[in-house]
Image (cartoon, rainbow, N blue to C red; front, side, top):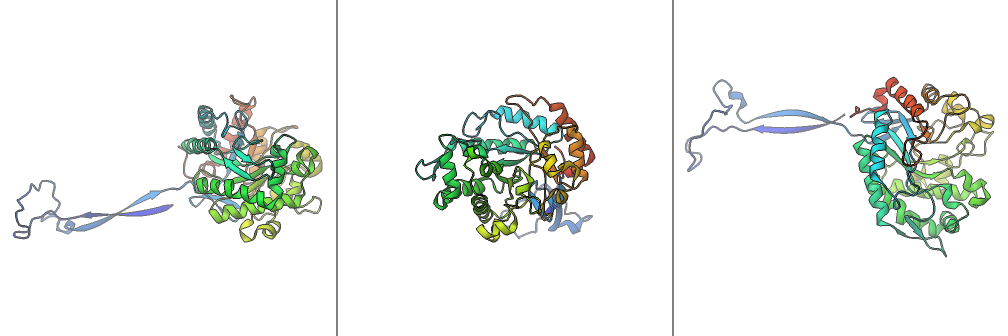
Length: 388
């Protein structure tokens, strides 16, 4: 708890004859300088006013807020209309949706700030260099943060997705941006740094998610099958730039499959490990937390994340770790999945997804059951500074 001392000076109002020329006697009905209370003359009193900051930090393998642990009781509301921010952004939707999420105990939401194409970030056709970010984009994201603060919702903005790299008119530009040094630096200078300068100190920024499921950019022909080394370099350069712009801004990458977030011998490799990231971006390039995704189709190859601790699942155990996307399928309720994750040592869960466009998702009742259960189980970790 931060404490600020406010010094209040209680100055004597007694008149000393001859001290002030032209001063007249004053009514002393409210004067504390009496014979019964002489010590109050020119006395200083101190009052401690306690203020709390909702800003998230990392200590070891925990998220912390105001000296207390934060547990991520979250969801994905990735978009309402697709490419909302700079496109068809409806603040009324986000306001009512975040209000309802807050009511059922949700404290954090992952949002795709850019979904695909070049609605907000404009790239040159010949080089992949960024030449413009629209004013509308910044205005809409500003409003989203305002709404998030109103409803005590931590935002995890996702800056890019594998969808940018799919075979479309702009896909080649995005592939150049992520692999060419000059184009990459233009993205960092024109977008990543300004984003950090604008929102890095915002108390309701949980952390920046650099890309949604880059796995498919490497694995799928339609996304260009970019080398893992290029993706690692891109993430490292972006992370270093964020930390150099604002050291307190947290960063992650929404890895789709644990096999790219783990050095376990049965997997491929952790493409965002500290060792890999430092090799491309230096000491400031390390991620602050891991947020891999899990779906039940992975169970046969990688096991069930709900039934394992993060380290058993394959993570290195050096940072906070939560499941950035998931859904309850294959015999498990969402409430069971959320509770198992908490009991097995995860730092939180964000299910996919909390709306189906303009309305709440069809499985809203399941979401409500899950998030309310966690809030009831650990209210002091879901809202460390109290629920408003």
